[in-house]
Amino acid sequence: MELTRKGISNKAAWEAAGYRLPAFDIEAVARNTKERPVWIHFGAGNIFRAFQANVVQNLLNEGVMDTGLIAAEGYDYELIEKMYHPHDNLSILVTLKADGTIEKTVVGSIVESLVLDSGNAAAYTRLKEIFSAPSLQMASFTITEKGYALTNARGEVLPDIRADYEAGPAAPVSYLGKVISLLYTRYQAEKLPIAMVSMDNCSHNGDKLYVAVDTFARKWAKSGLVDSGFVDYVNSSSVSFPWTMIDKITPRPDPKIQDMLKADAIDGLDPIVTTKNTYAAPFVNAEECEYLVIEDHFPNGRPALEKGGFIFTERETVDKVERMKVTTCLNPLHTALAIFGCLLDYRLISREMENPSLKRLAERIGYDEGLPVVTNPGILDPKEFLREVLEVRIPNPFMPDTPQRIVTDTSQKLSIRYGETIKSYLASDTLDVSSLKLIPLVFAGWLRYLMAIDDNGQPFSLSPDPLLDTVCPYVKDISLGGNNDLSVLDPLLRNAQIFGVDLFEAGLADMVKDYFAKLTAGTKAVEKTLKEAVA
Image (cartoon, rainbow, N blue to C red; front, side, top):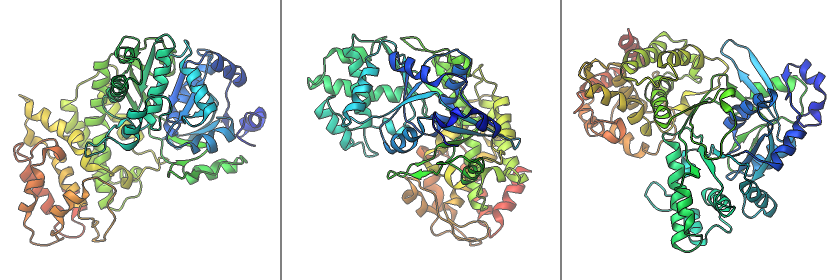
């Protein structure tokens, strides 16, 4: 069997192997989409194929929609050239369920795929055609948070962005420049309405996209490179930039999944690593849980995606859901498990939940310390969301997620994932910040992690983090079992940019240092301290 439109025409063989196939006429949907495109998506990676594309497939199967998705990729063209085109835009979704079962689906809702390359005349002409279509309702994005950046960490305009500012929309080279030039094409086509929908996993993502688009429009207009009315169009009711909250884990292609699919006699499923170091395969392995909450602001209308499970609401509610996830019900638990998982030499987050102390740590951070200050968004129950995270999602044995990956960039995460909870306690008339016991333990655990020595006294490699050169010197002279002067940590503990608050002013610094002293008492001190702290 082969993963192509011709290959899946042998339905009996695929269904006998346990695959769900598209139940709609792919050719007819492709024709409809070419004639009247509705939804184009930028960022042709795993989460798009596993989540949005599968939701659209279900709606096509049910007859709710009759047009499919158009995928465009502006960073790594090899995804389109080596993954999409050879398989006629089909992919296999392998859903990994916590009960140990799997579900295999051939996803066929993506009916056209294009490189976002202004130097590719055919592809760029087609993209302009799509953006000139009155039927187009939205352009969505999963290009990562840094995909919206106009400057580097020092505030300097990125070279490609600067080149596009100066050259205008004719032949842009940056990802953003190309997208915004297409939006200018839509402006020229009678100022047609559209929703520009960031679906990236970052706070207030719609604002990040808006700032980039508005900045480009103003730069170009000021230089006379576009009509001055383009700025007004971007800021009019014809163009929206909704906020969204997305939540679904889609790890790298798992070799075990590849072997399983090969056992079904499917050819040509070998993953690739592109020249831009993107890991991709004709299949996607993903968890079953998924959430996409979207601000319902679509100037040109939208498909009935709520029938596929998307949740549409107002901006304030999207913000509450995002805060619920990031500051209480998911991200803080992942970070805690990642830090201590590295120290205790775990290689899978799911295996950590078999350790009673680590399981209890995650539970207490969520239920005891986070839930008392969470704002209930109304559309999702925080306690039920947290229960699903702790009992279904994190323990899922099929999910090949590692502490070493999740601990990446922890210095950038602590202030949001824990600092916001501390601030809520400090602002409360009924809660005492000194009752927080596990969040200070996580802070101490991170300091212990920075020593790059595990609980057995063995060295390990720290995961990438932009502040390692800044924070590691604070612990460089600390030894396990030594008589350490912990006052060297004081300047770091006062750093509100890292922790969200000055831990001395918050009254938590001494607790962090006490925990750190216990964690560095010798080998096996991490496991011992954890057990005592969560008892």
